[in-house]
Amino acid sequence: MSETWNSPDKFNREAALWDENPQRRAVALDVAKAIIAATKPKSTTHALEFGCGTGLVTMEIAPLVKSLLAVDTSREMLSVLREKIKTSGFTSIETICTDLSSPSDTIAADKTFELIYSSMTLHHIDDTEGFISRVSKLLSPGGTLALADLDKEDGLFHDDPLEKVHHGFDRGALADLLKAAGLEQLSFETIYTFNKTNRSGATAAYPVFQVTARKPISSTF
Ligand SMILES: C[S@@+](CC[C@H](N)C(=O)[O-])C[C@H]1O[C@@H](n2cnc3c(N)ncnc32)[C@H](O)[C@@H]1O
Image (cartoon, rainbow, N blue to C red):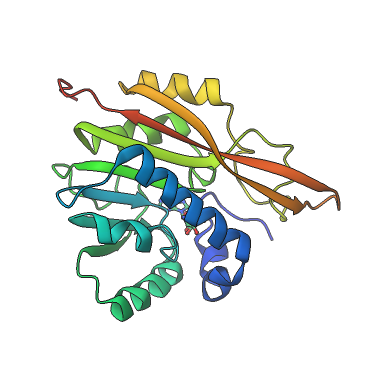
C-alpha cells in the first residue's frame, strides 16, 4: 500500500507488535548507549525525542534526565509507550502526538531542550533541511542534537517499495545541513549494523550512524 511521509497509518498498524522484533530492540539499546556516551545526560537535562515510537530509546534515557518530551505522529505507537510509562511509574515523561516537521506542530515556540535526539526517524521526514532548522531552534544554547539513522543505502532496506522514505543519508551532505542550521562540533560514529534479508532476497549490511552536533552557547537563533 502507498503511504504518505510520516506514515502514521503504517505505524499505527505496526505498534502492537513493534517491540517483538529483536533487531529493533537491539538497535534502540545501542542508540541509547551512544546517546548517553556522547551527550552525558544529567538530572537537570530537559530532553526531547522525535519519533519516539513505543519508547524503546525513551525508556532508557528517561531515568537519567529531569524531563523527557516524547513526540510521535502515531497515536498507537504512543499508546504502547503510555502503557510502559504507567507500569514503570516514571513521572518525567510527557507524550505528545504531533508532527514536528509541520509548521503547525504543537510544541510551544518558547520551549527549548538541552538534548534532542532521535532513532531511525529522520529518514521518514520529507524536508530534511527544513526539519533540521526547526529542531535546531528548539535546542537551548549549548544544547546537543543526536541523530541516529541509516547511512546511504541501496533503496532496499524498507520492505514496501512504495513507502516514502529517504534511502539513508550521506554523512557529508547531512553535515552540511547541520552546519547550515548553525550547529557545530559535529561528530559521526557507526553505532549499529542491521544484517537483514532485503526485499530483493539478498542478505545485506545496513550501517547506522549517530551524529551529534552542538548549538553554540552564544547562539541567538
Ligand atoms: C522507524 S520508527 C522508529 C521508532 C523508535 N524511534 C524506535 O527506535 O523504535 C519511526 C517513528 O517516527 C515517527 N514519525 C515519523 N515522522 C514523524 C514526524 N514528522 N514527527 C514525529 N514522529 C514521526 C513514526 O510514527 C514512528 O513511530
